[in-house]
Image 1 (cartoon, rainbow, N blue to C red):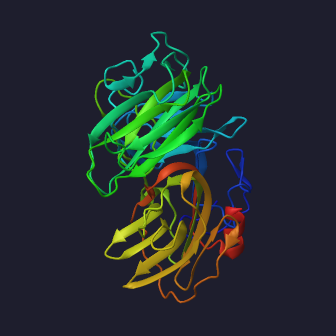
Image 2 (cartoon, rainbow, N blue to C red; image 1 turned 90 degrees about the vertical axis):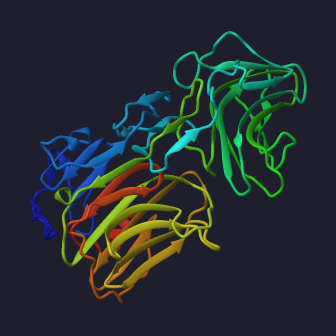
Image 3 (cartoon, rainbow, N blue to C red; image 1 turned 45 degrees about the vertical axis):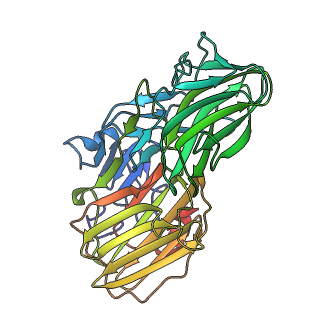
Length: 422
C-alpha cells in the first residue's frame, strides 16, 4: 500500500478488484482517483461509489449546488437532479449512441430568461401567422411536452422578447427542434424589434430531436431587448421544446421555466487535504473530459484545477483566450513571488470540446502534456508551493463534463504525462 504523502510504490496489483494498471502512471498509483465514467472514488486504500465519498465513513469531498439542475440519462432523456446532488452519468450523443461522459459540472450560475420554456402557446410567445397545436408531442425529457408550430407561409414568426440589453453584452439562445411537415427554419438571436445585431442561421431539422444554439453580442447603436426568433421558410410545421435564452456567450444545461425566469446555481467540487496525498518534492495531476467555452479574449477563460493557498502560493491548470490565443492550456505554479509555467495554444472554442491534460510540479521543474503530447520541461523552478493543507478545487471555472481526475503524490515523469493524456 502507498505510504500516504510519500508516493512510494508497492507490490499490490489491485484494490477491491480494481487493477492498478488503468490508473497508474510512471510507476505510481494515484493517491486520489475520481472516475466519473465508472462512478468510482478510488484511493490507495480502497474504492467506493462517488456518492459514498460524501459519507462520514470515507474521506469527504465537498460538492455544492444550491438549486435543482438537469442532465441527460443513458436513454437520452433530460432528467431533473436534486439540489446538492452531483450530476454523475451525464450522457452525450455520439451520432450513433448515448455515451456516458461522467460528471456534468458548471461553475457559472445561469438564468433562463424565457419565462415559458415549454408552453409556446402562452402569450409570452408572440406569433405572426404561426399557431401552436393544442396536442402535445413526445419530447426530449421522455414526456409529452413538445409542441407543434404551424406556419401559414413564408416569413412567419414565433418569437420571445427578453430583457433590456446593453452594448457589449452577449446572449445565447437554444432550443430543441425536429421536423414536422417542414425540415428547415431560420433561427435568430437579435437585440431590437428592427433586428439590430441579429445573428441568424438556417437550421436543418430531422425526425430526431436536436438542440440548436445561436449566440450574438449587442453591437453599438440603440439596443432594445434581447430576443430569440423562428422565421418560416415555407408553409408547414415544426416541433419545438425547451427554449432558453441566457446572457452569456455559450449555452448551458437546460433550465425549465413556467411563468418566470429561473436560475440554476453554480456548482463547486473540492477535495480537502484529508482526501489527497502530499509529497514535499513533487505532485502530478491529470484530468480529462469535455469543455464548452467561447473566445472571450481573457487570460483565464476556464480553470480546470485550482490549488490555491492564497498569498501567491498555488498550482493551477487553466485555459486562456487572451490576445491571439484560441485555447491555450497553461500549467502554472507560484511560490515566494516566483511564477513558472508551461503552455500550448491547441484548442478551438466550441461546445463540449474534448480535452485530456496532465501536469507535474516539483521543486526544480514544471511540465505538462495535452492529448498525448508532452511539452519541454522548465527546469528553472527552485521551490514547490506548499499546498499540503489546501483544498484542491476541481472545475473551478469550468462548464462541461469530467470523466477522470487523478492526483499523484509524486512525479510521473514526461513519459507518464504522455500516457496519462493519450
